[in-house]
Image (cartoon, rainbow, N blue to C red; front, side, top):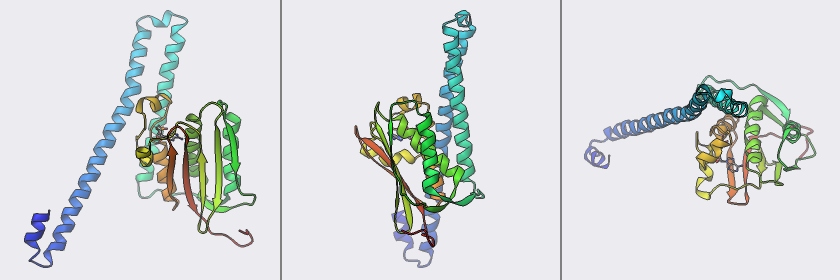
Length: 264
Ligand code: ADP
């Protein structure tokens, strides 16, 4: 690129055009590379549960079905793998919908504090681990314009990760803070954390810190990528901070305009 640039620099006017063309090619190559990588990832993610299922089904067909102890266990494995594939395909459909330009959000004005409390309560009622919940929520309502279904999905992904990685007896802290033009939401856990160099990558599609471990936990590797798409589409930002062995906090923002009578 640099060689061509210096040769053509003399012919003023032509240089800009050339640079733009070269730039477009590399950008396109990057997109193409990402697309190939994505297809490879999807294929791999689907092949794993399928080969597992094939082994268990073969064993059942070979006679394991007659064993009253083994058969239910083997069937259970194939059922879990099927569930995981369904989750994966649903996540993929969700992402591909978001990728298409004509995607519509159904935004309504809601009290975020009430909305968030409802989701936290649902997790508190259904959680199976010994984890305590702490709420740092404002007393007064905060009205924001959001697509409730999408934000529910974002919070479901973040909170289920926080619970998944929480240690026995751990604490999960939920906070909402009002800033000038936005609100900042955070979910903090006391789990194993994420190595510093990987923290920003957890929002990439299929990125997992520990592939084997997280796949075993039933994740698709797409939860936070979907969350990022949805928060960005709401005009917000999402990021994480983490300390290995200490815990992880996921933050996101949503645009907010203080309205009449709401107070600050
Ligand atoms: P997955 O379905 O694997 O959970 P996500 O997109 O939700 O996919 O998360 C991506 C990866 O980020 C996870 O596989 C995990 O390695 C890491 N991660 C996400 N949340 C946490 C957390 N609260 N504590 C530790 N690691 C986390």
